[in-house]
Structure formats: C-alpha cells, structure tokens
Picture 1 (spheres, rainbow, N blue to C red):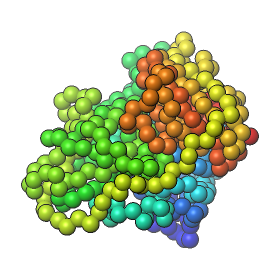
Picture 2: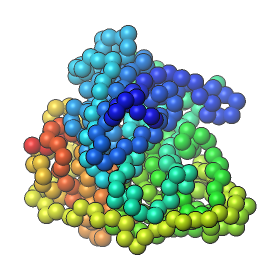
Picture 3: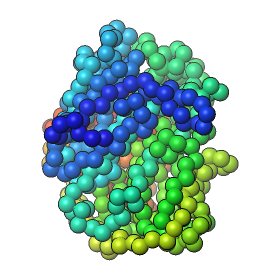
Length: 455
Ligand code: C2O
Ligand code: CU
Ligand code: CU
C-alpha cells in the first residue's frame, strides 16, 4: 500500500471479484477490494492514519492485531464504520458510531514486528474475515535495519488461511450464519451464544475450510534462489491450527515472534501456529539442490490439506545475508504486581471467559498502565488466547517450562486442552478499554471475549 499523503493511507472496503480457484470467480469483501488486503509498511516513530471507508453491505470495525494502539482506533467490536448509504437499523444495539469513513490513528511507537489487521465487528468477525477482510502490516525500525537479514524479494509475508468454496466459486460459510443472521438480527450472518448451537452443533469447534490458501492463492509455488529467505508466517485462519514442516527436510531459524525480534535465533524442525500467531523465520534454500522443490506442509492435516505451498529452487545465487547470533535487545521481563486467572471454557451453549459471555463495557480486569501482571489462562479445549494492546511472555505451561517455539514477546498463545498457561503481560502505551479473547473467530463471535481496562 502506498501513502496518499504524509503519514496517511486511504483504503476502501469493497465487494470485488477475485480468481482464487483457477477459472472461477469468488466474491471477496476486501480492504482495497483485494484478499488479502494491501500489506502496510510502517516505521517505528512515524505515526500513520489509515482512513477506512466502508462500501460493503455490512458495518465493520478494523483492528490492527499486535498494534499498541489507542483505544479509539483499536477496532472495538461496537465502534463501527457503517456502510456508505446504509443506516445502522440492522445492527447490534450497542453499535454507536455512525460513520462511513473512520480515521484509524496508529502512533507506531512499537518495535519492528509482523502485524496484521482484520475485521472485528461484534458477533460477525468470523464470517466477515472469512469473506476477505484481513491483511498484513509490517513495522520496521533501525534496530532491525542494521541486521543483515534477507530483504527485498527475499522477504516474503505469508498469510496462511483455509477456506471452502461453493461450486460456483463463492466462499462457502455455514448457513447457520449466513441465512439466519445473528442473534441480534444482523444482515449477513454471525452468532452469539445459543443461536449457533441450536442451528448446528458441528461448528462449536470453529469453521475450517478444505482449501489452504497462502496470500489468497491455493497451493502456490514460489520460485526462489538458492539463498536465505525471510518468511513472515501468519495464521489468519478462523479456526485451523497448523504444524508447519519443510519436506524433504530442513529447518526453520526463528528470528521473531508475534511482537518482534527474538534476542537470539532458535532453530525448529516444526512450527506450531494457531489462529492469530506469527512466526518470523529464515529458511536457507541453498541447503537444497538447484531444481528441487521444497514443500511447506501442515503435519496436522491429511491429503490435500496437508500441502500449504511449494518453493522451487530455480537458480544458484549470491547471498550476502546472515542470521546474526544476537538479533535484538527485547524489553526485559518486568516484575509482576498482580496475578489473575482467566478460564476459557464452554458454559452451557456459549464459549465463555470466567463463565461469562462477552458483555461490551464490563471489564473483567483493571490493570494499571506501566505495570505487568501474571495472567493464568486455563481451558477446556484449544483456545488461541489473544490480548489487545499488551504483549506478553509465556512463563509456563502446566507449571513446566514453555516450549522452544513459545519464546519472545507475543500477543497470542495457543492454550491447549486442559492446559494452564501462565503469561507475563505488560500494560504499556495507552489507558482505556481493550479486549482479550479467543482467536478462534467462531469462539470469539460465540462470546469468548472480555474487556479489560488499563487505568
Ligand atoms: Cu486479531 Cu481482537 O484480534
Ligand atoms: Cu489484537
Ligand atoms: Cu476458543
């Protein structure tokens, strides 16, 4: 995306046609009319305003995931941009802001990191993201510029997600949402609590598609040189988890987590990635013979869904890049001033936090600005737990040391069935109203969300 003026971008959300499956036409709801939306390049210390204009048939709310953003621009679920030419009559009763263009202001004071943005409308996030409302945003800074990491065409943001398609090429999303509408009479599907279960209990675990897309393309091929590449992996799926592996073998050198560079690189054979998480990795394609194909697979799936994408090493090349032994000096772990527990569990017909379905405006916690707290996350299922504003480190899983892939500062953590995950979260940057929620987007829409207020 290119700025339309100093520090200013304009992006229109609109309905557009895309050729996702060869020879067929898919209607997408896209930022800028594309799926994924444009990749924004942001620089630490350079604030930007992104004016989002809504020409879709539904209200939206845009969230910069991983952003340290003031509350008024954070994509609160009822803080809506309404469609040009529509009223809010069909909306949620809490939908209060009646604007067709909203200026989202991002101070961009945070470290270099791989962020993404997506819709966050109350009760309808899952179907609206499924239709295409997501894209990536990269924050860069001087600390990172000074490193000899692969860059330019050897840096690939990879947004991985799954979708299903109807025979006519349109996105297929369960009728439960799209035909009956949300519990609050929304126009284009959504769910809240029992609405959902009553229609089809099959989707309690979230909606998975049977076609895996990378940057909106099924099973794509990237031609690469025999050199190091930086892959910024994002799982933008509604509910699908992946465990990524390279075949015929090879390692990922992890250089960054959700919220920026690690202190030092870590090598992994496989990378587990749950919805909302990012892994910034380097893969050295000079380890493979020229002419060979390297497949990125998901070992959690079978058949066609196992294949994510392919790299074909087409040529020998000079490579001046390197992964230094010291990457950055991330913020140190502060001392926590409080401990709180958040239990992610099904309660009756809803997915809830501490047995409460989401109620906007009712914070479950009031951490103080500039402090850190231990948040203990417990669960009955796989819940990728995400905090707005606050970045955290994983201290322990079930009282034991976290996994090698849990390192660094993060904003999303996969809490696995019956696990107890302790994270140390810092509340920095802004006071105000934020959310924590499950990033399984169907769970989020089924009320597994809560406000917290930084005071
Ligand atoms: Cu990526 Cu509140 O979400
Ligand atoms: Cu977020
Ligand atoms: Cu969940």
